[in-house]
Image (cartoon, rainbow, N blue to C red; front, side, top):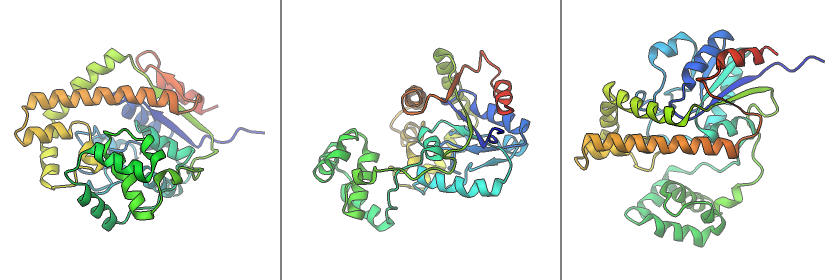
Length: 308
């Protein structure tokens, strides 16, 4: 009996590991489509600072789900899975090459996610107004009174996740822990996939991260952040926590120098890359192939495997 046709290729890895170039090369070889799987590159506001493919790169092969969300939207992994479900119907027989560094998005594609009801805007506004000016640790204590199990899973300093849990309780009257049941299967559940995690040498990656951050500043990232700052968006929105944004806004506010903002952005990005290594190693399955792109021609390697 012939093997099932390959449904998709997954390219994951830490930031600055060369994922986008690899995905473009694979899409070109397989008459495929590059599909963004990065939680920050969905936003239209920050093309440069989130290292989205350039307009020329996007024109070289089809790219989807890049820059299609306004920064004022609290885009989620669940919405990403729904967008991909619709996209796969539109792609028909073209090979999707999913590329990014957001582990939860890859999980949503296959394993799926627990369904949490959408939070009405009025509820979100009410909760955030009530919590404004209060210490995150105080809000965590409030969460623990309503949802002890949920609070145990969230760091007392993680304001965004604490607020999310409080919003869920306010909207539903139920603790967020009750929604962590069996996940709804993702749009690629049970399909034949090729999965690779790019794992470059750590020291080389740190240098690339530092160099790339300065390059993004030269290419207009500060102007992007200035425009974003001018919108007066809720600081808890995902886009306001993109790597580099808090430090560059602090610089624009006159609180720190540009050099200090750069160092802060570089440090935040390096820490994120370390978390990406850890998350994929411990949270994703053993079927992921880990490759150093400096030691292996990954495109050639995957193309051969995809043909099998």
